[in-house]
Length: 621
Image (cartoon, rainbow, N blue to C red; front, side):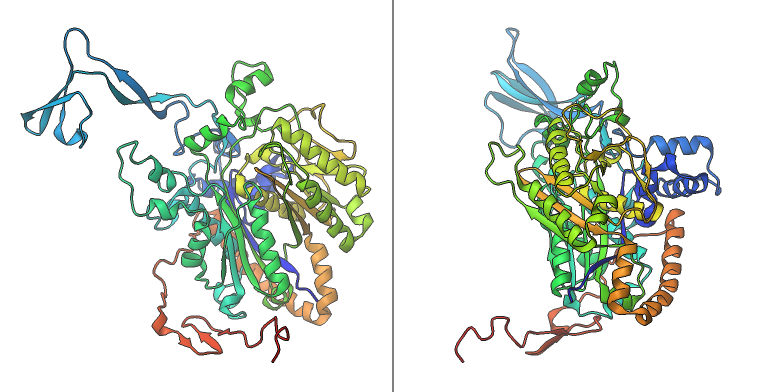
């Protein structure tokens, strides 16, 4: 029987806060929670944001937390959106009164003097420069960014301050935090998990769509010579798109198994998830850490998306509202009158294991991913235009849910996490895809969630944000409304869809399945079928029997206690991410290497080498 990929841990951070134990999800539905649950969410965010308190937060602190999480005006260490650094190109010429003349430190002069420059040494390390002909200069200046809204991590949270982040780009800092949070949320020691599997039965699939483009990554490398800054030996490698996986292997898990990242623009999380699910279903791996990390709230990156016409500019937001000031909080308005998406940053990771291992470990079951489908758009008139691929992925994901759960379940107890970018093109094209899918499968009013309204668009990680909100629904039972909209746009297809600006209380067991949908630039489409924990537990009971499940539940009590202990420390801001630099490094001379197995010091089990070929019998003996 095919092994089921079960979620036993999840974690990360986005503009709503820490993902593990549903803290970030609760920030999305804060106004629908009881006061006791709101207090837990405030406490979690206060620990993340480094706010001092004596166990009780003041009303002013709570208001600060609300205002400095989710989408808002860009603030903090990202960049000053009112004073963005530029270099202005100027062509200057001498006047009739004589040459252009200035004095400079000699070491500041260019090594190769431009034509027309005459330099005379003044002593004391200074020189006079006379320019007798037309010359070109780049002058540092400041400009106001046309887009000032973004989904930033909660103000005050600095992942690099929690471990020895040696010039790590922000995206890699967030990866270390997110992967650590996911692992620690399991309540199971990593050594215990590793002791149950061979070293090559662990996979890590993680990365980013854009790579690391801030000044500690490729941004520093590409901008160095134009800003008279030194390119370091770290800029180039740290900027690579698969570096989050490399960091997790090298400093968090110590994994020697399958690794890499699959890049599909804004569908990248589901691309990685597809590989993870395939590894578990085929037995290529029994444990998979899968996720993405993206830190695109960088002025240069946002300039690029603004030039594409993709982002909601301040001017367009004001025109939309007939206002003299932009409503940053409502910058993202999926499926309503809108003008572009809002950039967001996020790091989301899950720990997937096969069902047999989940039961053996006594792991907490948060859900399962039964299927992930990926399809391209085919021929297109432009690389940015919509195509047919997402119709295929959605139909497959819905059909997969129906084949397992039946018609009644998908018609009455399923919903969809829409890509919902908040662009005019997406509201039309995706709503048609979702509406047709619902219509074909007999769903009269399919509930639609669009959480980019709160978080912004985290590019590669966006479906990871969806998954975290989905797991939260199965804990608390509240489907987040699209809280930034007051109407559905006239051109949105909604005959068989249910859009709501209000949160919907559907109950923790009210939904058997969710479809996650992602549409990536260039025609990268992916949709995933995710199963609720109450469904997964039914499947495990049928497959493994009452006796084994009873043992699993007994073990799970201890697992939950350990997980809760971590959550309590993290809520206080006292839990540190895992970062094992130069830890138990093994070289080739230390391994026990034979023609049938490899034994590595520090790993309990051996790696068995293949003794039979899967192509056996295709050649004459």
